[in-house]
Length: 353
Image 1 (cartoon, one colour):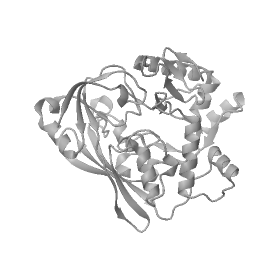
Image 2: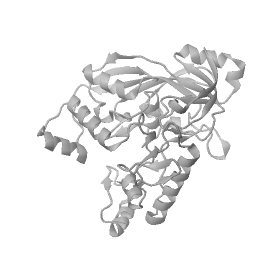
Image 3: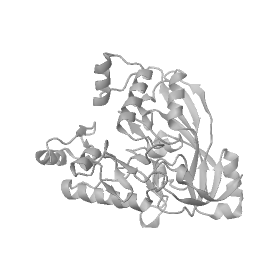
Image 4: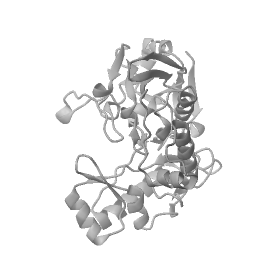
């Protein structure tokens, strides 16, 4: 185990925010976690688990011990009558695992291509795109309790997946200080397993995908074709974090009742919305932000991407990078605008550190 001090984090978060980890330990195996917990000083200190840094906003130097997850590996670990079970280390790059699975004949993750971050972060956020969420392809995960050092395994039900939500995003302290069921800050994910369907069917139905189908005259695309389309769509719409710092979609798409949606449509007939199976209606947060005039605007070095209002970007680059304070000031200003116009409070996706 190598303990590093005052480690720059600018290139360990996709926003490119300049900050330091006062103490950082690279976790390449379960043994590294055990070594951290065996050290009296590190064991007693607060901890922050860092993966690809694609879903965080750092607002200052990080005082908790940063556990930088770098556990690698990807392999087929089993199969059932219905699915191949594929496992990946938590430190693996998510998109590279998607590409690997497809090229090895295990379809099912293609709609989730090019989502930034690591495998370990995928169940925390219950990542999703173009009609597929991680929970739709999830089998189980392994993690280590950072208090006791005990390893444990969770299935989908135990992860309590929701829209961009899981048990890993909730505190272990419930109402009135009582113990809760959340694992935020209490566990480090080491491996994730996916159940990839043998009876694969394409997940289509989104306008961007249908446009690709029409342009290519391909009516029955295979998984690799959908993967290529998703890559093209995301490259055209979203900035590459290596070029323009960002954390992907900054706000969750809000869900409202049919009555609320009907009321908004009376005032805003063009609002982009999707009817869900449970009867509720999901609104496009990017459309709401754009309607309030934020696309292309900036506060300091924090800006709203000019091609997709849902994405906040680092306009200062690597030489004069945005600060976490600027990002959050912009985010709060956007929240205020949307609430005042639509009566809807947007909820940020990234974790604020």
